[in-house]
Image (cartoon, rainbow, N blue to C red; front, side):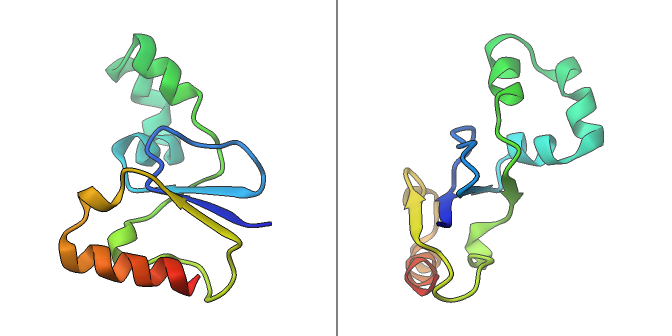
Length: 101
């Protein structure tokens, strides 16, 4: 089963069936070995704990540019609190992309 967790931010799933996709700065830091190393110098406390708890199955991608999966290749698409961050035209295209995959 393939599940997409779109616009996940720091709410990632560690399930092997789930691909977490977001463009947030937290995830960009998590995916970069260099940035991951300096992160403890930049944040601390609860934020650092949340950062360290992020799943490794993360794809850093700008969802305004589409969903990087083939048509009909996904079983479940989950997104919560994402649409309000997209411009109206982008949101319409995003929903068409959700339907496509």
